[in-house]
Image (cartoon, rainbow, N blue to C red; front, top):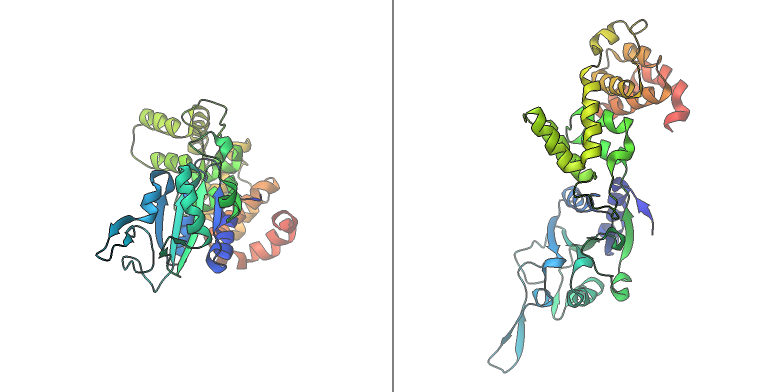
Length: 340
């Protein structure tokens, strides 16, 4: 199956699950952001999200409870947590996303019920509302989590895609969510550390996009340094945690950025890859419509990867910077082949 980063996965979910009304199955390692992608999709579409952890359900939880009637027949009372027709708990006038998370961790009897729910949009006499879209997710069998092999009939009902973890997508998320810029600089410097998940190793703590989000929260807190070290290592693992905390020393030793902007042609250049990324990211945050020319003058003395890094991040923050003479006449003409 195709591997797509979270940004492209969200585009696929929009095109297939939302617009085409076809169920989609997301595969991926723990902490890859599968659940978060579906949550964001619901926000984007102003949809109500119904989050069902299939591993915690029994088959009767989908079908409901049988109740005898005076006529001698049995009717099934539908579960209140599912958006079936007649359940006024859920809206009829806006989209509903039914998210079947951990579906391949469910019991075989639950998977059997899901055949009909996903393919026919019903369980027995209970029919999903027409405004419901279905998305499922689970870890890969190779991840050694609590998973069962997905039955072939159920698998054939989905459009499948695997979520690929990459640092650039996490950086975009960080920029949009006010994460401290040191994390952007760190992942520009060490992108491979965005994930260290290895199912063959017994490590309890390992780096994933999810655990780095925790680390970012810890870093921005007022924890004592020794407690912060332990918390970050406890989230992302000893190795990645130690590398990140070591990188904080580079960030703290960064030169005065205002002084660099004031004397862009003569100010000293940073020494080392880590410091160069730190300065590039720092300058990207300092760039404005008024000082863009001075900032570019300094950046242009650095290696191209740092120039592209700074401008890319700056324009992500303020698109108006792309209209400056520094961008149009200097950056674009010289570096166009690097950022296409």
